[in-house]
Length: 199
Image (cartoon, rainbow, N blue to C red):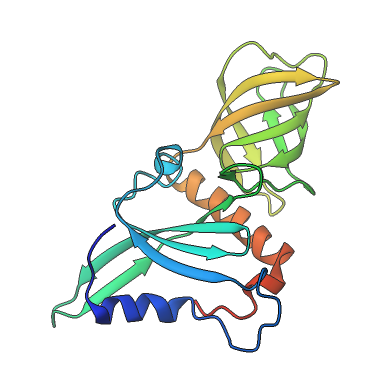
């Protein structure tokens, strides 16, 4: 953990200030902390951020990459990046979007589109066409519902009953776009968890 002034900590507390009218303590439990150490499993996903803001909302941890700058007047100016949403139920892992709609992967070997069944920042499941090469990791593209194409490394892990699980890794802008998409989907799906949060 890093040491910040009371003024800086107050600023961060205001970023995620829960309202007082919540009645469900389990779902409305929010907490906030600033950390200089990120769990090793998240370091690559967060782009090796040096400083993060951790917000806990119900069963989820939101790891925000945090940049601190000082303006010409010497004023403290934090900038929050797009958070990685971690699901704490059943282990600590990137939140997975299971009700996927209109997300596809281009299989460059066959030039065909493959349907995505679930998606997280670090993995996915897809329907496996018989002609799909399942032997090696390779570069491919993920196509989001808005038509944006993201470059990523696709590495098959296992195949069972016509469904393949794979690790994925996106870099730079592709990683940021994927994280923004997943964060937006999480906020839409769990709007009741976010309604009393100011950010």
